[in-house]
Length: 218
Image 1 (cartoon, rainbow, N blue to C red):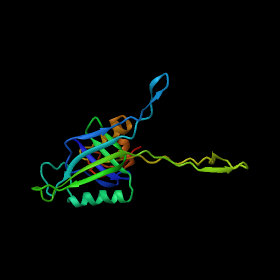
Image 2 (image 1 turned 45 degrees about the horizontal axis):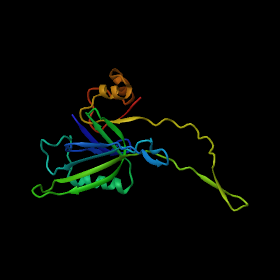
Image 3 (image 1 turned 90 degrees about the vertical axis):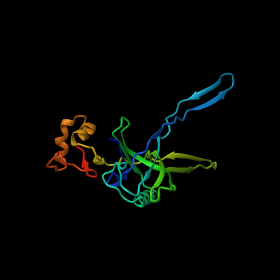
Image 4 (image 1 turned 120 degrees about the horizontal axis):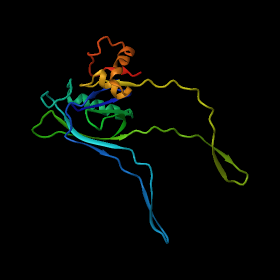
């Protein structure tokens, strides 16, 4: 079964979308350029693709019904307030999409979030959202050396090597339908290694896991 999750950080705070969208669109545009060169004509350059964009439409229902796929349903205002809060605080969003060949578990930014209330559906809030893949970057420090001839030359100041950092602990947030076997298969390449995940997380019964739990991955 498909599940779609929005949260922040490593998934400690977030929610499963209550109603799955009818479709989800992936835009993986290129960034190639073309130029006209004298005596040669049109030529093109191949550049790295642009950041992936994901968009979909659905709604936050006021009342529970067979169309709700989440284990827990909140009022529409809870979902809307949380998304607005993340945008206001300039948070990166963790988007998880499971149950599809296009499984996703990565960081995104919210580029667009539109809300609509339709007549005859009082209390239900329809929305459309657009996400863009997040690519981390770091600015370089530039030192300007002014020459006697009043020209400037920029150089990159070399930084001392940073001490080795402890690798960040990989985690997985459980969604409905997950099993330790499938989690081990996804992250460790072998479902039979589920006992390693159970051991590191002090799970006494590997058959009893619940949506929202965050497990460390060895």
